[in-house]
Length: 394
Image 1 (tube, rainbow, N blue to C red):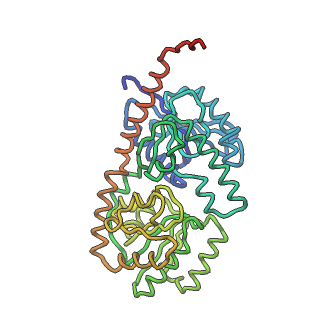
Image 2 (cartoon, helix red, strand yellow):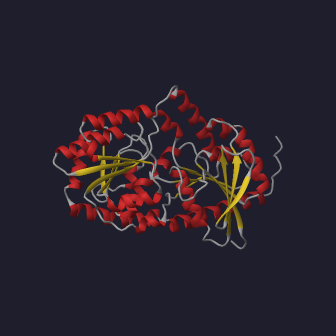
Image 3 (tube, rainbow, N blue to C red):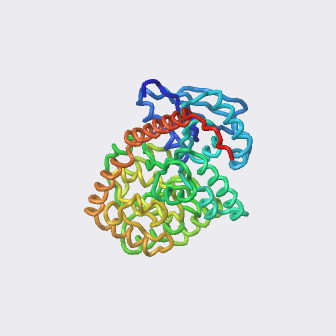
């Protein structure tokens, strides 16, 4: 591009970039940081904040971060009602060349007359169906209608996995670009030093993440004779489910072998990966979990569910194992195989690190993302320049 283009990245963005909450915030920080390496891009990050009553603008490196008040308490109401109206007005004043929305913010920017890109990080309607709470069938249906409408509206969609692309068939009308999520460069610099036999998992504790099944499987690993520990990093987001996990740990006599770490920051996750023997994530529903990407980049073999995007991330028998998340024995068998074989862990970990560098490094992801911006702008300019043909007489 011959001139600097202004890109508005509309997404969840943490106040403290060192401690993002959740995958979308982590991806957004890493991607924005990598995109700032391009001198021809001027980056504005636009987000909403329930704690604000008026907009605020701060600087982060070469980017400006715009924080708007959250207009409604419920996310879906905000994204399709007052929050959308506020976002449209603000972006029209900002005047970007391209708007790149992530996740639910794609609902907020739909309909804007500007080149638009939407990255789909997950399917809220699908997550809702495997969550707790009342009226989940109705809530899932409402989310599905809203999400499908947004997918149809955007001219360019970034699919972070083949699993996403499959869901877009017959719905999306724009061009779909295959670009996986980036992870922090520091993940590739982790120095592996196993400290005993450790199964590490970084995920919130809830029904969808299937923590109970992991605990049950770990109990079988210990029963088979392995002197192993299970370290769980992540907050409890469903209290009743968290209580059930605690009861089962106690019933199985695992209290001395299970460490509940709670919420930990990115640096602590990397320290855990450096010491771990295996990374485990046996969720019932996922899209493209950053935890798996980070484990692979650190050279840790992965045991993951054979569902959703995870089979596209983990090469079964090469970088880890895929398991049926509803079959505890299957999970236990693969965990046992890895904790008992140091050479296999090393071979799989090396293979995982090589794959991760090709697919998840932020420099590669930013370069492909910038190419989408160029294509979106060029296509919009061509469309705007096309002469309007007079209607044919009937």
